[in-house]
Length: 541
Image 1 (cartoon, rainbow, N blue to C red):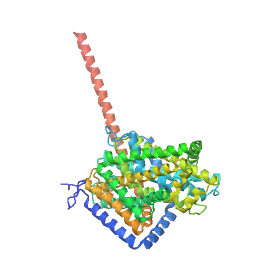
Image 2: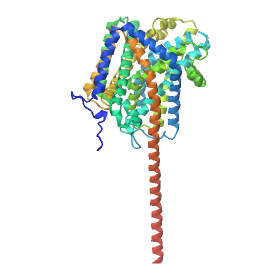
Image 3: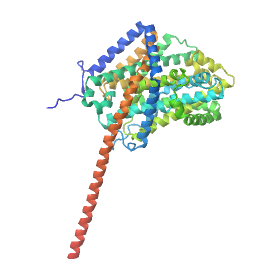
């Protein structure tokens, strides 16, 4: 008699919590241990992590570059190939959320906050120190926007789309738990519910929590800088901790309300506020220049797409790409469990083609326009002799956005809107991240008890606050990026696993279709024969 397998989402701990005990308690232990060690050995930890990051970047840069390109090509094949019409959740599945709400949520969770932080700073930094062009020239401006688009465009969203599609497929179509371990079912079978699966999920929990905590920490630093710049509010640790407490409180309320009533509503409001900010920048700024730069930047990016996406400084031997592109690829891959799982959570009922094209194209195009509206204008100002933004970026990149708006009419109002938007994006990142971690630690339950969601929302804020007070955010940020290397291998396996699963289901659907057609054909033939027999009998009579 075969041994009954207990699924990870069916397990209960000895304390009666609806969690997968090994993942929940071991993850919690390692989180506490990591925080303590990072705070006690802050300098040593930062040095060790930095050395590991440099080793990874110098020796595995080609691997990161190859992987993100493979992911993108693979997704395009799935979208345009025979699997495109397959629906996540089965033939009769319908989307849980309206398309606009869906876009708003995946955008807010994905990289909404990054666009605010880097939309001015990154293009200016590339303009000042371009990879190949002469600094401060028109060629440097074009190169700056090309690489900014590369870092925030199709490749970044391709990583998220791959994880999101794989998880949503195995969860809603195959009926497996919503957790990273489910992706390996074609290889491990029911072993995913054992120690190997637990280890995979523990790794994903740590990467997600530390990534969120560090981002929350750096994010409140930007909010504090904005409040200091606009209202002269001291941007010290006290202000930052108060901000974390406030963001965590709102995020906790959102988590308790759930995806439909909490995360969705906040995400939609974020997009409304972001649209207001973009419209203000568009109307009050150089409108025609923004549209021209968007068209030119997008065209230049697409024209140079293959070259810049495969460039690795092979013959120049510089470190620019490792400092930027490889850093981003490791960051996106390290974050992919969090963002991918959240996208999976909200994507039931979409066709594979709709999912891939929606996740790849819409956020990327919005990003391109956003970067053009802020980054291109900042570069134009710098080329015209206005060095205030350049000085702000060099001094404190967190203030760059606020300095950017100083020359605009209603600058005070715009900067207030920007601060609100930054806070809003961080709240949605925090609450969606809490839902993801809760799903991982509960073995893949989609609707775990509210108390567990609250626990992880508060834990995120606490970790960020502790690390801000004691130092160590930079060390953990670096550690998060380093986790991108082993996850890159996991994503490659994920590609094969997803293809294998889709092919099996596609063959089954084709067989059912052919069987149905045969049954319909036989039914038609039988009807014809019956009609002929009736006609003959009538004639004979």
